[in-house]
Length: 435
Ligand SMILES: [Zn+2]
Image 1 (cartoon, protein in one colour):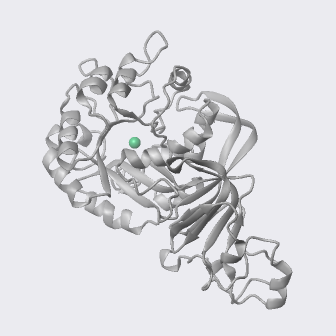
Image 2: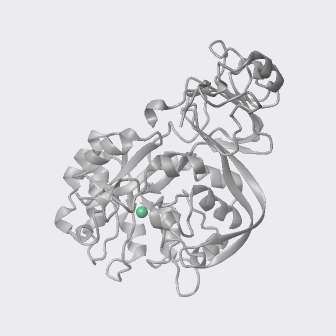
């Protein structure tokens, strides 16, 4: 399918009958400019742009040329664009970065080359995600396979935390094998793929040992990248507070922050003071919603205490997307419902996420940056939001993704904002068929 990818402007349909074109011009987004001469390939007009890195939170225009952001500012002349989109009443953000996903598909019963992972492009663009970070599905022994069959074949920009376990998330017993958790090979592999392997992951460990965390940090030090921790089973021998105040470094990431599965919430209904102490030291807290890692019981009091997430993420996989998590737009909506301002929700899903993995080239709409853009509706109504434990919270707003642009190319268009209007005599056999 990728070989037939549309280039910006190809939707314009150069074969459209001139008479009909006159009829429809001005009724829709597509301006009939000779786009070879247009200053911009695409202009998204009059949306409410939220670009936290550049401090933009206002109605303005965004112009794209050659896959990059060309201009952000009010009053960009539509005549200069091969294609324009009217985004009034909608929010325009940098392409969303999902910091926690499982994308290493294959035929094993696991997340490593397994059926529990999902193919990125099928589940990213429809919620505004243009960059997805796989978190530990692959280890150094199978990262090459992941790179070749998923990362290099996806339009979604796929980055990765490399599992400290050589086999990655190959299944329960493999992920308990301390002899396969080796800092040296993990660090060497990470250094071979700078900017693609953006961190080290430890996950699902049930034992009492600190070695998985210590070896991950050692690999992270050697490769100068952060560590993300899924703290596995809750063990008194290795308490959460010690992880956050002694074991992790500033800039390391604690994911599943609102799960309640590892002592995040105390008996008194308040957050474990270690969470606050960790934050004070610079440890970052990621949502990693997942299929079993997001509890209203933790998130509601946590947010009341002011413990907002540094980064939002889905922990996307087959189970989570078909239960309470659903997709990134739904997770973002949940934090709106919890009282987090929209601009902070966007920051925690774009610029802060990019910074956490040292990819400052991403997560913003600066001129020259990759033209990764999302356009959202913020709908008002009566909505229900389910956590990972079957509990529902009502909410009166919901983000849905209207349009996603990846490197200047429209990759998701819910209501045909960029499509040509159909009229009798148009379309069908012979004219720019794609399927
Ligand atoms: Zn995960």
